[in-house]
Picture 1: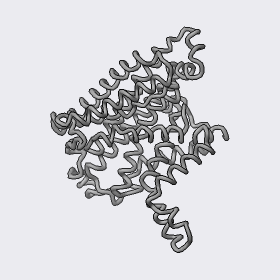
Picture 2: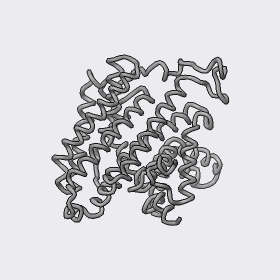
Picture 3: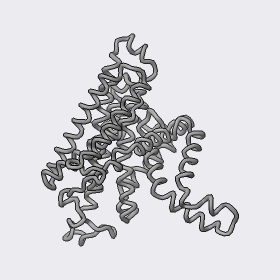
Picture 4: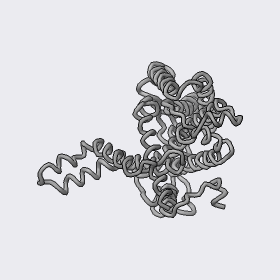
Length: 356
């Protein structure tokens, strides 16, 4: 059952299986294990970024394609839901239409970029995607009448996904294990289930004959071409599929935040974060997306607090309080990244599988 669900791609390492199982359990039960607005928000972001990073790994890790336009596709999906929810009203039909339209537009745009760019060398393709993504980000910022410009768009989701919606009053008296049964809980599980389905779909893709061909192209595109595979077609198909999944992840993110803006879904900082998550977790393995996204989002949200506590513990000692100041959390995040690359050159998943 589990093997079939995972498309035969088992962890192949007991420590890795335990880590992945722990992440899955924590995310599935996050509202009950870690009640609180911030912790549940962190869990929802992890769910979204797992899908986003996994979709990028389909390009980079499996196809060997370097792209800097992934946040553009992510943003297209997010703005799709925001625009349809704004103009069609708060309803699941608006979310569905916005998500599908965003995924379709992202796939078409990826097709156009791929057909015109994937015949050139990798570095030139990366530069083209960077130029297109930058142009789209500027365009979104300037079309204030449509996109809200730099201020972004705030919109309403269906009433069932809002905190004012209550359920379970008769059976559970409105609460279960101390957690309020309201629309925010439903919104979290909407994001969690959506992310789970998208991740399992990606697992199915990379373990299919299509995924095997992509890996062959990554290893030696000339040899793959010589035995009859149309390398450009496979790369374009992977780009389109990756873009569509990234757009759907953006739709989930928009539903959770009920807000989209250029800095939230289109920034180059977000693209760099995605690259870091892929490298930390391990390229060429979707399980790396789970570990990389979890570690990075947790560090972003809690490293500053941990450093503030550590600085308080060493107060009075020379130099250490300044080094551990909460204001220097980005410095230590960079140090942690360097250490992870040094000790885990193939990513956490690659190292754990190697040591099995």
